[in-house]
Structures are given as C-alpha cells and as structure tokens.
Length: 277
Image 1 (cartoon, rainbow, N blue to C red):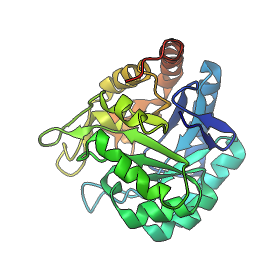
Image 2 (image 1 turned 90 degrees about the vertical axis):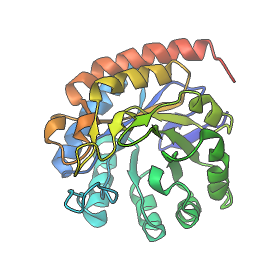
Image 3 (image 1 turned 180 degrees about the horizontal axis):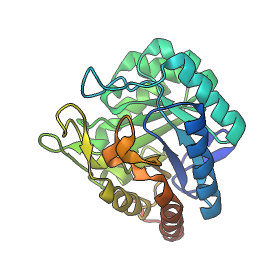
Image 4 (image 1 turned 180 degrees about the vertical axis):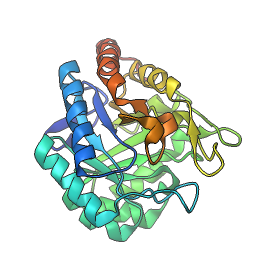
C-alpha cells in the first residue's frame, strides 16, 4: 500500500484514519477558522489525522442562481490563512487546468470533482504541480475503471494520488453507495477515501438545489471505516440548514466530536484485522 504525505500527515489504507472535513464552500476567514479549529480539536482528541476542506468556487451548482463562493483569489487567501493559523493540511477543488498552479501553492491537496474525473487536461495539469491530487470517482463511473483515471495523473510522474468514493447515480435525483468499490479501488495501492456526506446527497432533489439525507451520513462513514479505508470525507457546518450549499447532507458541527471517537474505534478494529480482496 502506498503512503501519501499530506503536509506533516501520512495517509494510507494501512495507517490510522485521516478525516477530511469542513464546510461545503468558504463563507469567510472567521467562519473557516472556527470550523477548522473545532475539527482539529475533535480529530486530535480522537486520534485521527485532520485535513481541512472547503471550496472557493462551487462551479457545478444545480441552478445558475446558486451561491458559488468567495472566488479563487480570496478563497485561496483564506485557505492559506487556515493552514498557517491552525497548522493543518488543506484541500480544495480545481475546475480548470489554468487554476492548478495557483491552487498548488495555497493548499496541500487539490481535488478533482467527480463530474470532471475524466477530463484529461485537468488531471494532467494537476499532476504536473506535484501536489497531492484527490480524485473523486464520477457518479457515472465504475470503481474498476478508476485505474484509467489514475494513469493520467501518473503520466506526469506524480504518484501523490488519493481516490474518493462519493456514490453512484441510481435513477433520478438519487445515489447509492456500493461498498465493493472501496476494496476494488484499494487494489491500485493508493489511499481510498469515503465521502460520507455527498454519498447521501439527492442531486437536484429540491428542484433548484440538491437535497440530502444527512441522518445517514454517519452510517456511511462507519460502514466504510469498518472496511479499513485511509480516510473519510465529511462536510460539516454549525447550522447546516442555513449553509449556502449542500446543507441537507452536511453533519452538524456539534455532532462531530462523538462521531470522530466512534470512527476511530471502527478504524482500530478494521486495521488490526485487515481483510483484503
């Protein structure tokens, strides 16, 4: 199994759990610092690694009227401040090849959104930065097709890669999580992450925005961690119902400390008794 270095953190399918968590989109520096500080403490208390995530631009909103975020210039400034002040690695999305170089300077991990996971120019540009690249598996893609995606980043000489499961399209406005995909993607050797909150999303389910079933997000996280994955991706907010995007599938911030402790129990059991496919 490959070990990926994220700042001062080692991430692998064989190592203690890494938690990638934060709000869906950036709302300002003070808000980002508040969530990052709370999550850093919750993860430290539970013994989990922590990477702060947030998006500077939600470029794939359901509606043209959807709030997209702070934009790349202000967003990357905020992400840089979070890394400097909290001392944790950071992650954000990229949407176009020309964004990659600037993003690589401001964060530790650049993320390829699920809808863009087959965009060759974007994957190659991300790989060329040398940064860690987290690729979300497309809702339309089989887990055994991900080696083709991985090879595009590897073609640049960059093997700092993580793969994230975020659910598969299941009819209209629905997703299903096939947990066979986690060990299948782990066969690549790269760290596998479970996106517990987007996997309970209901894409476009509210007409002009996506719905979700946040009550099932902890279930998804626990199930995935029990298989022995490298990490979980969880979006959180102090008041999800007032969040500018993805509120219906985000876990309230006050619930995260207990969830972190629970996940680390599952993680310890899974990694003491590994089961490889």
